Image (cartoon, rainbow, N blue to C red):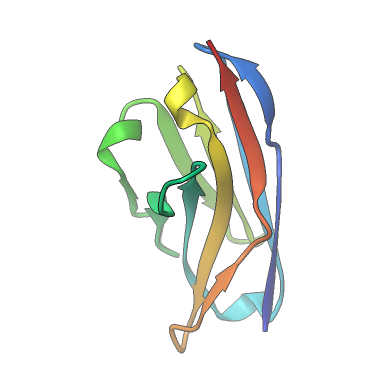
Length: 116
């Protein structure tokens, strides 16, 4: 089992920045890919960014050039640096991870609110 705990959400003005962190514990040695999803009110959960254990990253089109995903394998932690935030980035952000058997895990979510 893997437990994921997010932190770093909050309220920020448009154009500002936030950095989200997600720390994995439990059977974290088995984690392969990690990523971030978000869910805005009334909308489906959507992928934001993902990163492999080797550091290969991918991004959803709406965040390309503004968000950066990174991970510290020694700390079992994944980060999401969010710059040039827009009101449409407002959502609950969830950390996601897969283990070596492709079991998927989710964090509890952290709220990000961007005011205009």
